[in-house]
Length: 132
Image (cartoon, rainbow, N blue to C red; front, side, top):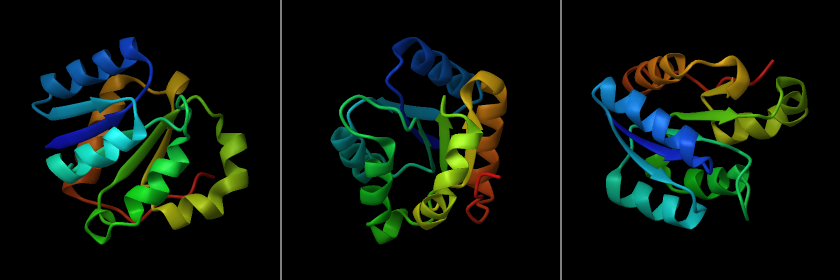
């Protein structure tokens, strides 16, 4: 399985990549959103792990562009962010339109849970889940 990881925290990104590698998966770690779009085109990811709080542009901008390509409409996207669930409820309609598969709150999620969810979604995609 190939994962596109978009995360600005280098320490966290390295830990996520190690966890993915231990589980037998490849990952492309990117910080810049335009580079991430280009990488998706090249590597054809099975799933995307995306932080919404990025330098320069937001993860939402990435999602709008990513979902504008028909071949990427079925690729599961996990939002892995420090944005509290209560704040995300306000944008749940937009999340549904962007096809977010799942939302994980970083402080409450272990890396093995993130990897397990990415595996499940990549091999058995589910409809978009709107944060409660």
